[in-house]
Image (cartoon, rainbow over all chains, first blue to last red):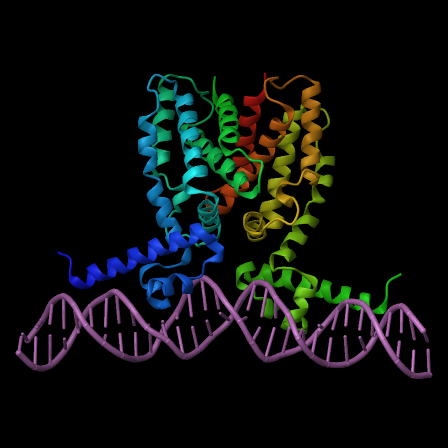
Length: 199
Length: 199
DNA sequence: TGATTTAAGTGACCGAGGTCAGTGAAATAA
DNA sequence: TTATTTCACTGACCTCGGTCACTTAAATCA
């Protein structure tokens, strides 16, 4: 059972989250201060920290929520495709989503936090239970069963490299100010890497 | 001709640089404040900013200096190797240097700054005139002349992907807290990618 | 019901990176 | 030599993310 107090606290938390994300979208993560968020919400600065450990945490929570998107994305993928093409199709869909829905600002925050924040557990960006990684593992296992991959590379390495290809292209997208088509760059890069893994 | 004043200024600058790097090495970049650096040097805080635009700039300058290392590294590479193996040999040497000389702390700073700092020019991490990129371009051109690469990928894309492979592995090294052998991870990843580019 | 405990919320405070009007001695102009 | 300009250097000051002893009202206990 939830008490009146817990209900109020959850409302405050949600209000902070919504306000913060709205302000981030309008002015960019770096240009929004905690004080701006809390005064907009009509609470004190300290209240922010009863609900979130750091400024980053708001973005990380949203990012985590975004990740459920891939379950829907996976459903759209043609089951008759070969496993390598399934991964490419998933990445195509994912990159479209990152560029058009999530956006560079949130992704930059996530990719910076992964390097900076002393990890309290395994960081989400490389967390093996991450939805997208479980999908990729599934496709790769299909590929192994069909015998399309070289046998001198162990499965964990195949998996790690495919995941790394994703971060590689996202990172390069983030450090380029313009003229970087994430979707096509990711496609070519991952396709080439997968070709290198094939028999 | 250099004036007395300019000489003094350069001395101050050099002293700030040396002190900062010594403190960074001892306590880590994030745990050293500008005030600590300037009081150790016996100058005011403002002086730091007459010589450097941001705290990052000290590290970026050092990183730039490190890059000359690759000229020596390239000389050691066996000229009879095929171009793909030359790139692998260069990366092996480079990763050894990053892990044992440059260190995670400086690299983390560089990789964060690349995402954060609004680029005044093209950022050094992707600057085409960067020493290591010119070396790679040279080897890849050798490879093209020998006809070892697929012809459906244009040269600029081959070049971009090989560079990206480097950042991919360095980034993954930076977000892992342990159990990440940069040298061997880089080797396998780049080798696989290069295999995917071959005829 | 009244006494006690709990925890959401408060805001003064801290040290950080970075700014800028002002200073004074060196460089240059007269 | 003297007047003027230049610029390395100063340090009080700004805002920031984050902390913590404290307040207060709701939840629980007796």
